[in-house]
Structure formats: C-alpha cells, structure tokens
Image (cartoon, rainbow, N blue to C red; front, side, top):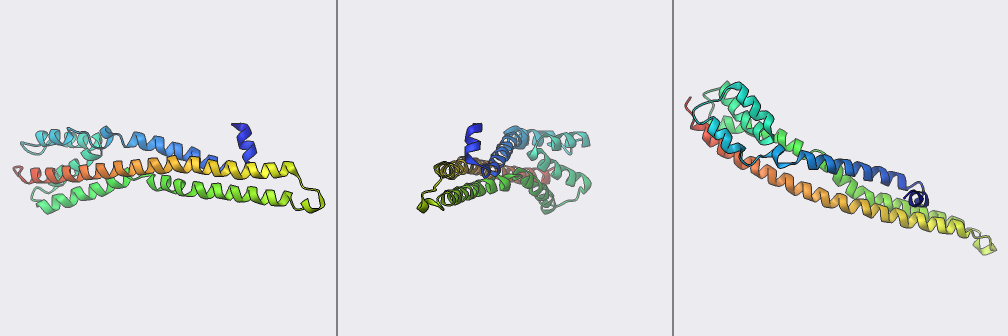
Length: 208
C-alpha cells in the first residue's frame, strides 16, 4: 500500500484525507441512525398508554425525551400541554413541529459533508491526473534531442492513473452511502411526522 501511495505522488494525500473523513462520517451515521436511537417501533404506543389517563409526571416526560428522537418530539407535546393546559390542537402541533425540525437537523447532520466528498473526490483524482500529465510532458521536453527521461515518463503515468483510480474508489462508496443515509433519514422523518400527528390527536382528547 505504501508503494502505491509513493507511486501516486503528492496529489494522493488530499484523497487519503477524504477517504479517512468519509469512513468516519459513515461510521458515525451508522451509529446515529439506528432505529432504537431515532424511532423505536413501540414507543408511540407506550407514550399513548402512559398518558391515557392524563399528563404523566415530569420525570416520565424527561425520560421519554431522552429515549430517542421520536421520544423528544412526543415529549415536546406533553410539555406544551403541561405548561399551557388550554393549548389548542394547533398550538400542540406547532410545538411538536418545532421539535421535529430540530430533530430533522440532527438526523441530516454530516450528510452534506459526505455528499461533498462524493463530488470532490473525482475532481481531486482529475487534479492528480493533470499533475501526472504535466510531469509526462515535462519529461519529454527534450525528447527531440534524444534526452527524454523514461523514468520520469513512467512516474507521470503512474501519478495520473493512481489518482484517477483513487478518486473513483472514494467517490463511489461515498455516493452510495450518502444515498442510503438520505433515504433512511427521509423514512425516519415520515415516521416521526405520522407519529406526531397521531399523538396530537391523542393529546387533544386528554382530560384538562
């Protein structure tokens, strides 16, 4: 591997930095976007059950908010109703939408960075290719007088090809994972929206 890096020349270092950053972002998003951290399947039913006879205790609401992203959205509705018992359905929906926007921002965290790497890696590879081509033509500057440098020619070709390959190797997985995480976040946001709508209707039926 070290020999490949040496053969690719100095333009490979920005690509290596992008690959390390992309791996870190992918690993972080895999952990952050686990179902239990975002929208546990039975949490909505449990929240409805706990609040079926009235508002639960503040400790219970805080525990719900710390459970997951969905729990935070549901807890915002309970807190709004606790703070203002006369809140209308529109007021409760507005409070939960505000919490939902904050949650959506956290779910989408680092996705733009991953998309940027997927877009920039081929360009960095192309930059390395251009550097390699410059070295090739530079080595052949005196070819007409028989002083061409075969070693410099080979080095220029290796720089061009290795950087092109590295750029694609980084960009393709980054693009695939970006699309995967993007679709996963969209599915979570739909789940949160539907659960919040159902919970708002439940809250409006609670005894005040």
